[in-house]
Length: 133
Ligand code: CMP
Image 1 (cartoon, rainbow, N blue to C red):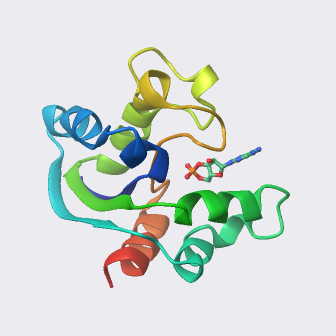
Image 2 (cartoon, protein in one colour; image 1 turned 180 degrees about the horizontal axis):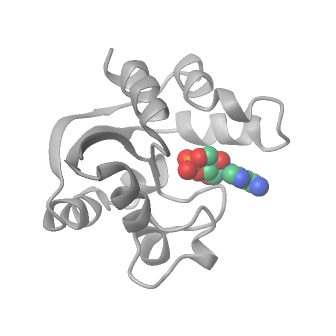
């Protein structure tokens, strides 16, 4: 099934000049960039994006991180894009990520894990609406 998924190249990726390195991984795996923008996220936007984590001990840190400097928001499209992009990204904690996943290659830590991708059809729809209207 052809799917769309929302991806963020988070501030630590942009700060370390990794935009091109990460995009090449998606593109060479056949995923098409449908939309893309470099922007600084507001706290309101970051809180909406991470609403399911509200109340968790790391929530404030997560919002501060996502808003500290520009990030890249994009929509990727392709066959089974949601699960394929999650597989390319690797596990939440870069220390546990499989070799050659984006987080294994570039992730700094559990909180600064470089990329985000939607985890379901519902979250893809919700997150695309948040970032691209
Ligand atoms: P992401 O895939 O963007 O979705 C939620 C984010 O919360 C996740 O990446 C991590 O960066 C962060 N996160 C999840 N669990 C923890 C945790 N235990 N401590 C710190 N950050 C976390």
